Image (tube, rainbow, N blue to C red; front, side, top):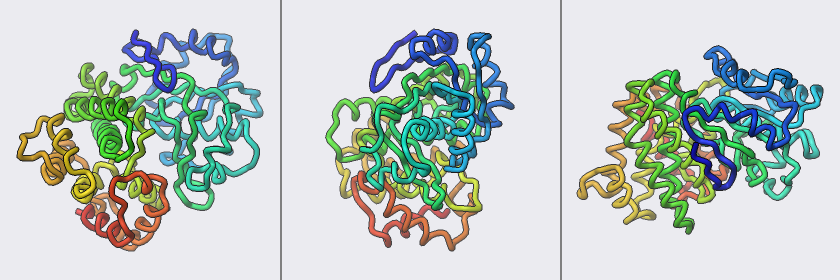
Length: 382
């Protein structure tokens, strides 16, 4: 096994799931709340995790995590946590269960009934303390990297899709076993894989100074570029699944640099009422337009990105990288644009307003105006 300590404790390898009982003992978790979703249950993944838990361990289960977690879901899970006297959380699934687990872990130990005061945009990070309930994150997809990140994105009761974040929200253990991703369907493999790709490239392009994070982001970018197509084409390709799991983890390790306009757009788009939109797929759709837009503020960095992606020197610019990403999207079967995902034109203004108020707007290398966000949306319409 490869034990990595970077921000948190990480157990990473095929078969890492067998370490769960020992790791729970180290953390002192004796009555866990399982936070997951019905897809994970149906796929038999929760059953695999349960096999590794001590037979006499009291277990509480919340499997109602929505595709985009909400404050309402947090309250439902929190009620179970308190009623069952839980002392920690095991999150199993993609980014949604892991983000929801962070919200539950926060509100189980902090005052108030609403998450919104704890959000980034309301200065909530400083209100979050070390009292957060311990969380073990077990990803079953290779995309968000939420298993090692300090943040979670929740749709608030107000309708806004906002991020909560603090070093205290980073799961105490990320248990990453690529075996759990082998059955992921091709469209989810593609969407989550492009989520990991976008995290790495947006973090690298951020202007914040963090050379170690840049190096990690480039490694994650190279892995995602090299293996996402293989993993999508053949879900049983163990080498591809292993490397995509690592790319996802690395993409979230470097969140401390900040993301950018792709995520500033994806967050409010994913929070639109009446739609069921996959976050990673939205990132893939928005990415080419944002890459072109960022060129004046990024410049020479595109040469390094192109080099990592194996593009010719003549394509070491915004157009070359953006065109290569667009071609990859097409090969992966990503929808050709927002219109193909079912969005109505009357959502454009609301998305642009939401992007301006998103925390990722602050860390993008080139900050768009509202009119420029509208243009980016229209360029991504397809």
